[in-house]
Length: 308
Image (tube, rainbow, N blue to C red; front, side, top):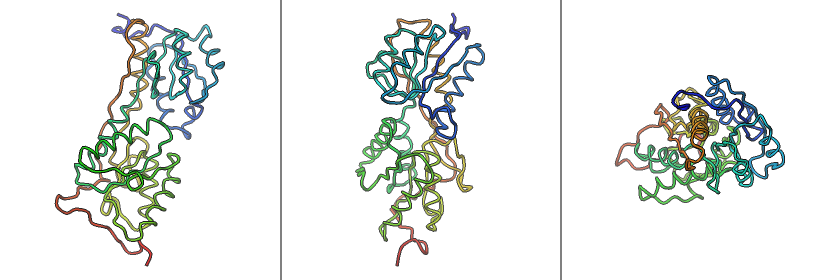
């Protein structure tokens, strides 16, 4: 009845997250997830408190001290991968939900984007648009991105295409536009006349901005000469005035659904634990062009792209 009435049976919620999650300039995705938790709680008069915790090798003493505070009635772990922390959270016995991380001990409920299916959806869209030569630009700093790449590879296999990391993947150390521009630019410069891909599938909007910049500085137009697609789509709806086709990764929904999961844990504490995986949303804009069947791959060689 409490869930149906929209009541949250607690007055105090503690969010554990990496330090960067509390700074919009450092991690806009997690920052907005925390905002969505705050928004979901606004109608319930719940006090929201925060504690910075490392993703891995977390401070267990700090975690236990904060969890055992009398005012801590429930907790959310956002992006915390340390399995020891997950075990401690389960042992404390207070309602706890994981966001964008997983409890390998299967003792805590979790909610996350369906990273694998999101990656598969993005790659499949490019294939459906006629692209076969696709360069993937990814930051693989966390297992969630590995899942996303796994979905991309699954889409390749479904089209009987062989994915070779050394040929089909540019791995970038972080999600910044600058780092991506340097990496993609170096890769383009090393082509030396070999065929260009017809599309780039990029693992984030700022990375997509870096990719577009690297292409444009070498005389390539998006999407006339080469297509660019992002997996994100929230932060930069358009890059260099090119509206960006993207698969939106669920973000605001993570916070609101986590609050619902907490409601369910309070009302049914003995209910089975599980993982809720949220789908992404394909948003078609103007940065991907269709390749007509039968045309195959055509290398694009504008003036000044290659060394003489």
